[in-house]
Image 1: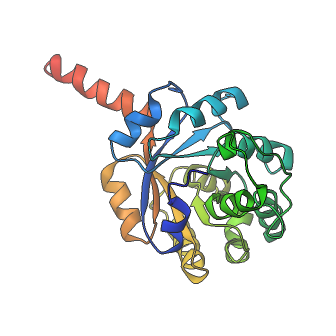
Image 2: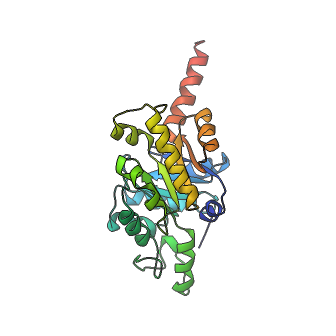
Image 3: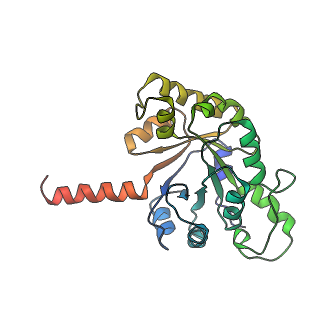
Length: 256
């Protein structure tokens, strides 16, 4: 099984950079991102509306590029997670994680026994359609799969220490827009309560030797979050980066 080493790098305290994709699910996406220096891509299904066939195609296109394909699923249910793993993604991001019990279930659904309860099927996309014994494949999949808990509610922040203490959860991701909305300080990322939440998440991640993740919209913000202790960053989204660069170029041509 192909393993880009993303989970191992994060577990050793390393930093990984990538991007989140909502729109441009093209055959060349993974290679373009890899050539740009990305180590992973998070393929969104929560807001983008794409299905399993699109994800399966993206995973196939990522093979051999060195880019780890991850997916954000739509909710905390086994049937939303397992098919994505069988399609070959190297990791799962789950939104609105609020309790240690949720985290425990998510982690168990993402791994085979004895670490979890993931259903068995082999000779599939996730093991590159290869034959052979399934036992080493199970072990390799358990070692490869990155499990990301999106912390984006007041309850999630309140319980973040217990969530990050959960075995099998690898990353605590700050969902800054949803969190500030839930806190009643919509988009106020300089607000003391939001800053306190950021520190609480990073502290919980560091305490339990997990990585803190964040989606930054620009380099300045990204560097601030790296300095604050985040180790897994998305540099914007495919829509934002393309539209921003295009707008800058068009404005330049118009002399603005």
